Length: 259
Image (tube, rainbow, N blue to C red; front, side):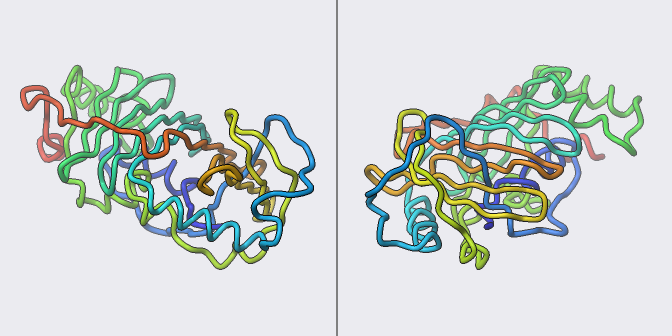
């Protein structure tokens, strides 16, 4: 399905971003998510009754690109490890939230042209301590980052590729594979009614749930099966998000770690 492409690439690149490496090669734009659970029932009439699945997908895509703010929350498997994510997006390039990797938790902010990350010991060990990085270097970096925010220019190492959640233009691009979507039963996502669109990508089944009440926003995207199952849900549409940079005294720049 599409580069509503929060899936494989984004999950992997989040970890690449916090592990001080670049990401962005081999971008695959077929990751429009899948998986809808919750109460399900047949719906003889909906606002999309006369629309083809591809038309519904396009309508929802355009609606998402016009949002001033929203929240995205979910889980994914990346490089064999579980990751959790809860982020509030506040316009192009600005967002804040939390990431969970390797049993640790990290805070993240993208604001004013910079990416900021702060985490507990397990978070940094899981992010930095990967194949090719010595245990001594890992512990040195973890020690330097204890209680501090890591800062890097948002445009460095392809920041949008590393974390596309902060830019709706990157998250919600059009994909020709939407033409093969099929429509399933209607469902509820966190109390909001939605229509289910499904597609296949090899062993993975992808599902998109689009709201049938109010604006046609995406409610859930997920992937079931395959090597990287994942689910993301959307909420907080156009609700205010307050975002400020961390105190300068608690910030360490990326180049100091790479030197």
